Image (cartoon, rainbow, N blue to C red; front, top):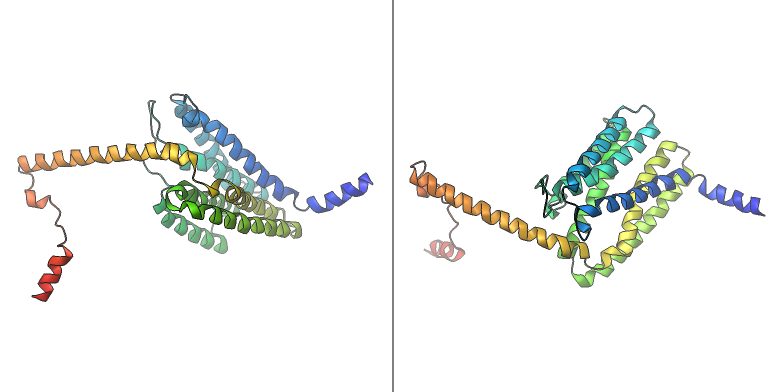
Amino acid sequence: MLRAIGNFFGFIFRPIGRTLLVALAGQLFFLVSVLSMIPLRMAENPVVNYNLFYMPILALIFFTLFYRTCVEQDESRGVIYGYFSALFAWPLIGEVASMPLDEGIVKQFSSINIKLLGGYFYVAAGWIMLKIMWRTKAVKNSVNTFFLVFLGIWTFELYMDNYSSKVPIDMMPTIGNWVATVFGIVSIVILVIAWRTPSVVKKTVLGCLLYLTFSLFIMGSSQWKTPSKFYVKYEAAHIDHEIQELQEEKEYLDYLRNYMIKEGLAKEEELVRKKHEEPEKEAEIKNE
């Protein structure tokens, strides 16, 4: 009896075992990465200068994995390297690089936040280029896998980082349910394809896709049904900081303008942008 049960589950799970393991490994990494970033600002008392130690470690692991992605001859192992290098690339490039901190020697490594809503243009261009590279075989599948996973994370991070301020609250449960339903079905389809294909490489790539679709299923089932506490707590403070920086930049530009006029480096009319005439005045001119 027990042997029959074991054979049944072996028949079901053995063909999709690699796909499931790859996807679950990604979820485990996500949990570890979240815990490792708690000292940055989510802790009650953030660790000062923690980013000076955390950033080099992330960078070292990422570049090592990406190097192995590029040089690995075994395609299946190369895909795994590409997968994990993308998982490490996101906290390095997408999170820690632009994360503003209140204290420390380096409060922010980069002022460029790739999760702003306008980043959709570059994400869309990235997906198109990935499609071309994959179809033309111009780049190794392992490298394409890196871009696949990184672009996938970037795509839903754009939504996750902006939905609290862009999506009407009463629409959040509906959108969340649709996301969970669609990507739940897609996850099942991926498992069916993995069960049918004999290729280890395809099973591995499907595991990378399953990590993305299952993540979207989880977020649609829970996190995306209500506004994000994290966004309200941390992004609001960051926006105040951005406003302050812009005000300081404006004041300095005013100082430069006055200095250049005073020193005869430019005339006042050369440094003042011409504004478009008001629509009413334009209408009057046309009538005349």
